[in-house]
Image (cartoon, rainbow, N blue to C red):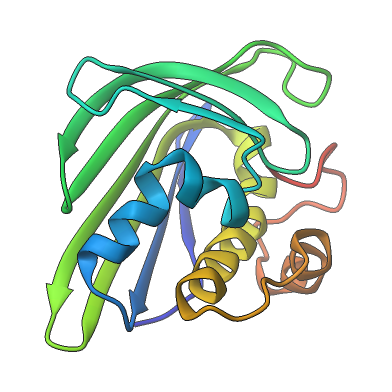
Length: 176
């Protein structure tokens, strides 16, 4: 399974997709993506509140930029599916804010878990930085699950930019 993500653009939005395989059971991956404790390290969440149910609220302060997001949980099927709204108010690098949907699907394998990540309705401008940014976050998730040192997000992001031709040198921010 490839670790590189893909992006599909529409007139104003984009859909980002990643597929990863982890040598850990779905329950362990689920805990890392759906609990405040799990999110704190790999996603750099300084605050996470998750009402784990469909219709529950999720609120995060995450990433190096410490974006404050809030939204409803649209799908909650532990340890298989998590989907939620990622709503961010306007900030300088996202002048119109964001009203995206984040989805994580886990599939058990004999030797671990396949993870499908889909961010949709992300604005075109934000999507360019999110490609290498999310890739760097998923590398951090892999290290967290393996119990190894997490790569520095900014260093990893900088290394990955060249791997994504969709990345624009004139983008106004370095991702999440």
